[in-house]
Amino acid sequence: MDHDEDMHTSRPSDEELADRLRLTIGRLARRLRQQSLGNMTPSQRSVLASLDRSGPLRSGELAKVENISPPSLSGIVGRLEDRGLVTRRSDPSDARSTIVEATSEATAALERARQERTAFLVKAIERLDDPQRAALMDALPVLDRLVGGE
Image (cartoon, rainbow, N blue to C red):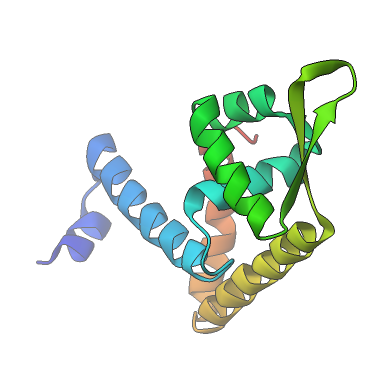
């Protein structure tokens, strides 16, 4: 009996379930990252996504959001700025601080990336049969609860 059959005939331990979930979600996350924003590091994508969600941020705030050191952030922002994806300006309320903002080019690139990831998932879902699609739909609230969404 292979591992998949064993998972269906006997109840897996919480540890086995967690391990399998981690591996599967990790593979899915890697595949989704590969679908978008070519020639950009995961750190650069993360910084742009944070700016897209939060709007302009002081460099120190952005470093905290990204959980990286200010010098590391400065290098990432510098490379993004060279590509025209972010701008930096002095903070009018504190001349020692810099405000980082995503450009319209970055916003457009992020939207294209979202569309590419969605299209990838649509193609994958189209290969599922109806019971598999229903199982996936039933799993979504459970996954939301795992991440604290419900």
